[in-house]
Image (tube, rainbow, N blue to C red; front, top):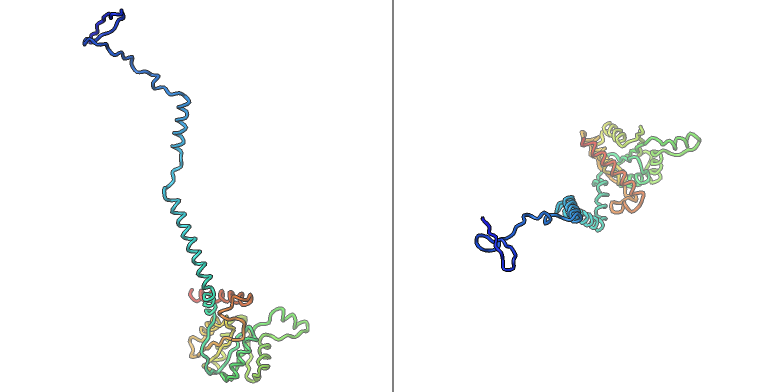
Length: 275
C-alpha cells in the first residue's frame, strides 16, 4: 500500500496511509520478550527434574498389603484366645488319643508288656485276683549296660522281668501262674512275635494286654497287627496305677515328656503303615 508523507501543523512529519490515518508502526518480533533469565531457567529445570524422577507407586498396593497383615494378626489373636479358653479340652482330647481300652472279659492269658513294672504289675495282679485269666506272661527286655556292670562287679539287681515277677508274688500271685518270657526283646514288635508263637502253640484264643496308659494304643496296634490273620481276641487293659491321666498329662514334667515322646512314636508308626 502506498504511503504519503504530510506535514502536521506542528512541523512534525507523520506517515499517513492511503486512508488518511496514521499508520501503526510495527518493528517486528522482539527477541528480548522470549528471553528468560538464567536463574529462572535453572529453577525451572530443577523442578522438571524432580517431577520426572519421582517414584511411581501403585495407588492401592501398600494399603492392600497392610490390610492383609492386619487380617493375619486378627486371625492369630482370635486363635490364641480360643486356644487359651479351650486349652484343657483340646489337650485332654490329645491325651485320650494315646489311650486304648476295651471292656475286659475272661481270657486265657494276661500279658505284662515291658516297661513300668510297678504300674503293670499292680494292674496284672488285680486282673488275676478277679479271675480274668489263670496265667500271666512276663515279657523280658535286655538288661542295660549299667545293670550288667553292676552284676559283673559283684552287685545283684534284678532285670525288669525278674522285678515284675517279684512284684506279682508280693501282691499274692502264685509263682505257678507266672510265665517268664524265653527271649528278651528290645522292641514291642519282638514281644508281640514271642506272644504270638506262645499263644498259637498253646491254642489260646483270648489275650489281655497290660500296658502303661500312654503307650496302650501303640502297643495294642502292634499286637493286633501280629494277630491279624489269626482268630485271637486281643484286649487292652491300661494300668490305672500311674500319674498319667488324659486330662492332666501336661501338668507335670515327667508325664509331659513321656506323652510328647509317645506322640512321636505313634505318629511314626502311622506314617510307616501308610507308606
